[in-house]
Image (tube, rainbow, N blue to C red):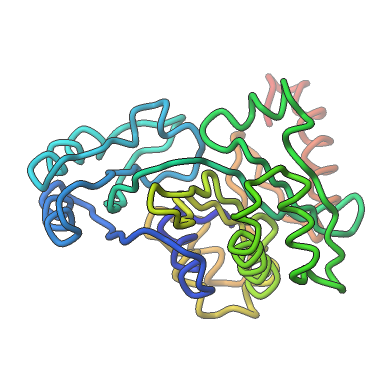
Length: 279
């Protein structure tokens, strides 16, 4: 289950990851009111479960409440990679000195977690990883041993982060690790983690993917799953304890086990070729 940024930051806040002040808004009027409460200069950010918001025009700086209203009017209703923007996060503007990248993800192949850290975060992290792979440090993390302070500091050194930031960044890494473990997450990502001009560390963005299979252990997270935008069939199926996946085609498959269902889908599609391509 992928979370919206505002949901990811709710988890971050509960685990004491440093954040900028922020408020969620569904209308331009709410965005203006939020900007006024936050002190004027803010960033209006589209809430969609996809990357590339900034390049698509879904992240805009506003110089005050009226500007925030105008920016929200431009962003709400936008289509970003097939995702319609229904809400924006209004966040106090941060004066950025440097940007870094940190994440923890589940490494299924090695039955472990992987820490990824880079001193060159920001929108172009994918390009950095492709053109300068040595600048993106990957460190296995034993889920049984966990991430202690020494391991967190070693990640900071390996990634080439400024030496004076090693102690506070290690604290942030340990707190993000706590999010991954205690929330049963398969991905916890901050891009960028920034050093402000006032020499503070702030997580400016957040991506979290929770393991749906662990949802029963976290009943307090059910509101994340039902955000009011889910397909109604999927919502009705979940109420009955069923896993439902909406696909194109004319024949529905009821099965016991993901592998069996996928195999049956292939068989039905193959058989359907004789009947005009029924799927």
